[in-house]
Image (cartoon, rainbow, N blue to C red; front, side, top):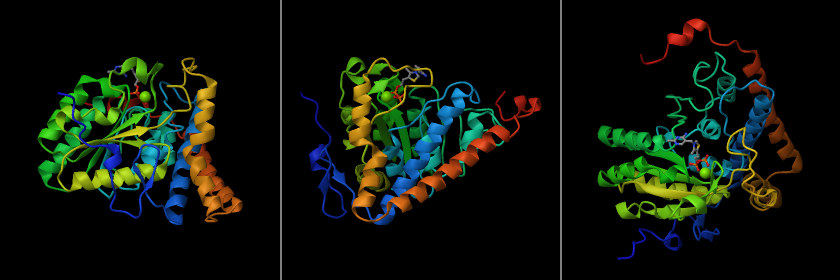
Length: 348
Ligand SMILES: Cc1ncc(C[n+]2csc(CCOP(=O)(O)OP(=O)(O)O)c2C)c(N)n1
Ligand SMILES: [Mg+2]
């Protein structure tokens, strides 16, 4: 029997206003001036922060791995707009954007990257290992796919405790081929756990294109054998992400179990700082940047609707740059942890 599509992208509807269609056939949320300004500011903060982190890495201030999120900003910002206090987020190693979107401080993230005391893990975790109980952010994980099982566990805890929190487990197109993802899908569907699986399909896993590694390249259908519904979303358009997020959150909170959102997105930079990205053409990257950039889309809309002037946008840019510059200064001036801290905050 042919595999059944658990949900088709074309049948997706929102309770919101008249539906505008994005290229995936999904709906696009109607954004107010305030929504667009908020999305613009938050995406710009992530972009500028990541650019600065890249610079500090080049100057030798950041050791170890560092994976930048530039290009994918609309995914995490759009998802976050649909959450309420108490909802949880967990992701892999490309995590700085998720932390900033969760409200963790730029200083705390940057100082962790440089391994300083004021970092969110006291300078002992680095880029891939930061957490904030207060902001409900559970990492930061270097083992590809591990966060999917942990995120499912968070959903299990929510169900067990009888609260209405939803957990968001982000992972990549490469991680989507890991075995533990499907063990997690099975349990999440069996126990109707309130978890949103967000597959950030940025088209590559390190240097491997999706088509070279995946038998099923429609990631929204990866839950089909567990009857987990899934949708493809234009992950470069923050309004499309928000519309999908609203539906997914409603689905989970109303007790219907897990749901999958495949975010079609793109990373502009290499996999990590040491990747010369020879597996794709410069034209491919340039085309995405010039035709689909998530921040430019909002910027153009703000100007076109006269919701902001060039001067207003310059002011936002300056505010964001100030926050990032302050975080970078702090991350260079703050002392390193004392050697006595080697044996604290660890499980022996
Ligand atoms: C279990 C495991 N296998 C392999 C790796 C090495 N590795 C690190 S990132 C990565 C690619 C993952 O790509 P994807 O899930 O698409 O995420 P993206 O980097 O594109 O965000 C691999 C294979 C690892 N860290 N963990
Ligand atoms: Mg990928």
